[in-house]
Length: 542
Image (cartoon, rainbow, N blue to C red; front, side, top):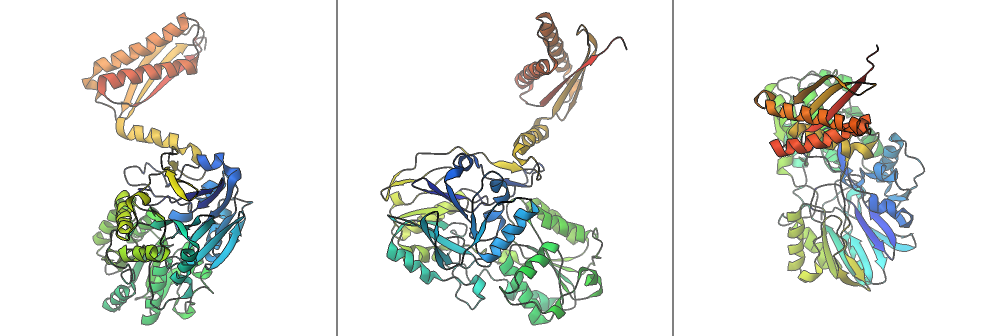
């Protein structure tokens, strides 16, 4: 809630827990500090892991399933997904050597008993194939989660076709609560056809008929990738699927979507030999833009960037990548490349106002919870529900960790809040300790470091050299000699007191020095630098 990414919904019915989605979020530039992504606080789920009946993954985007490896290292539960998403999950878990997890394939339109309860799936149109929404039955009506969806009635492949007539099933049974995607709630009208890039990309290929066109796009924007492929086929332009992930994706789509003509596909080593080819370059988050920067700077072995090469930005600027995108943009212009931003003219595949009204109109829910999106988006979604006649008191705009409790089909309170802390991921190993490391990085980046070293005689703990004080990124010490004098005195006095009281111990003494010096520096300078006391015990006989 109140953010873009890191999606996870916990539905608890008579003690049984159903987890819907488990996604990551990319850090913004200010909080990056070397971290790869941010995931949820799983402490509540770990504490109640024996009650978890299923993890339901609606589609294969990072903000929906990217946190699964981190969750499944802590708990064991069956994962339910459609066949294409299940394949992506299987590859992800295998790459991270996570075993013993059952991935159960569901159809987009079916009713299944899961954990003893009826779960009804319905197909929706989204930018990832085989996406679904779902409803879990209670004796007071269904809890329905819309998934990420749009209305789009144009002719399309079955893997993307939504069937909203399925929603009448829930209306007939009764809907206790509807949770609906809010990320497009500020847009008027319908999202479709504003989500399509086909015509825009066709124009690019027409305008640059004899030039190479590089398209950068997130690997998981499958709908757009297929629009680009269809346009290339229409123009009989040779295509290169540049990255391994993209090649695997195209291979995995065989049998689900129309095949790519093999005569139009070229390998990476043919890019420089094909004048008007289309090179589709995919990736994830910041790494995609960094790859494009390397290509523009001729830092990859198989592409020699030319000044008239065309670069098409066909992917949305998700939070956390803005700085990398600006760097890429600058480097392309420096190399006299041509940059075309298709995405700025395209809507993301999330429901706009009329899409959301359609869902509410058909389902007629008793309660409404805006889900997914920043706070203003949740509020915009709530106002749409109010326009549709749902009373204010039955519309719940919740914060992260806030629990909406229903008894006998009636909302009784929203007072309970589970305290949650984000988990910051820095690499694959020991990720649970990353928060401490990243806090240190933040301290270093804002208040600097003070290192204090002193040498003691190992026998009698008398000072034999020092203290020596070094600072980096703290203050200009030559203008504050008194601070150096005061903190060296604190260090010497603390050691002598510990020796005199016969309680000297190296680690404990250093911790005491650190605490005293930090308090002194905060009082004197208003800063909280990292303080690192070093006590070297020297054998004076050597």
